[in-house]
Amino acid sequence: MPKLYRLEGDQIVEGDDPFVALADDVPPPALLSPASAVILSFARFQREGDGILAQGVRVGVRLEPDERVEGLAYDLPRLALVALAFPKFRDGRAYSAASLLRERYKFAGEVRAVGDVLRDQALLMLRCGFDAFEPADGATVGEWSQALHRFRNVYQAAADRRVPAFAERAPAGLGRVG
Image 1 (tube, rainbow, N blue to C red):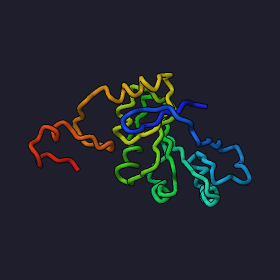
Image 2 (cartoon, one colour; image 1 turned 180 degrees about the horizontal axis):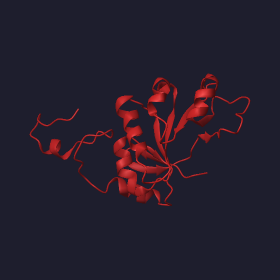
Image 3 (spheres, one colour; image 1 turned 180 degrees about the vertical axis):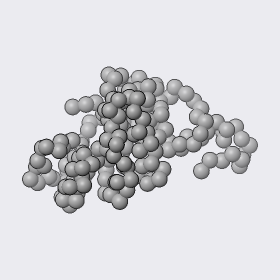
Image 4 (cartoon, one colour; image 1 turned 90 degrees about the horizontal axis):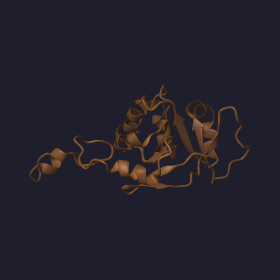
């Protein structure tokens, strides 16, 4: 079972993961309890999601980089989590997907980074809207928290709603960012 780090306030904490990933080739249990929490692939969610949600189960969907977040737009209010995959640390499409989830679709559930997730990416992931991480680099919770606070100033508005440096320095009422 992979580690799970979550953002709580302005710190990263390690926590238990109530979600179980159901592989596409594994049949779902005949009856899931309302206390269950599952992560489905996008394809499996399209096939079986309504039936699983009807059982009162908390559902998350894992999106691969070539799957468009727009395909989940209608279902987002029913989802507890969207896991965005990083097959390689160099593949940044999940950053765009997280930003779309938070800014365009106003998704309030958990946005989780999975795959080749490294602490060097932590600050940018946070700025794009991620709030949970399955780290692949073996870094500790403290090292992840440290990475989030590496730079005091940001220079543009983003999903994390931090105030950009130009707005901090502007006289009252000028340079406000919405």
